[in-house]
Length: 127
Image (cartoon, rainbow, N blue to C red; front, side):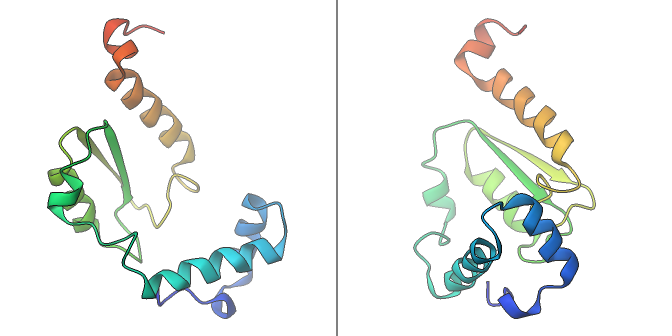
């Protein structure tokens, strides 16, 4: 999170963010400042294998194998720790590939995952 700086984003990233966040540049700046603030907080990001093992919901973990913030090994650790999890590593995916290069695949993959893993999906696998 220390890498997130409001001042260092190239124009292309501003363009992408403006397409996603319709409340304007103030909203985008607030999001980046919030992200940077997480560098000093361990409340949300201090997951251990034992705390992750308490998750009982079916969990789809999606990770880009080219994420510049978090190594893919973190995703593997989450997958091994969360009992009812599945891991989808997006080839050549960066940070947040579900919003960018893999958005369409994410819709298909997540719908299939939740259909398969929901009580309704197990009882009636066809839509």
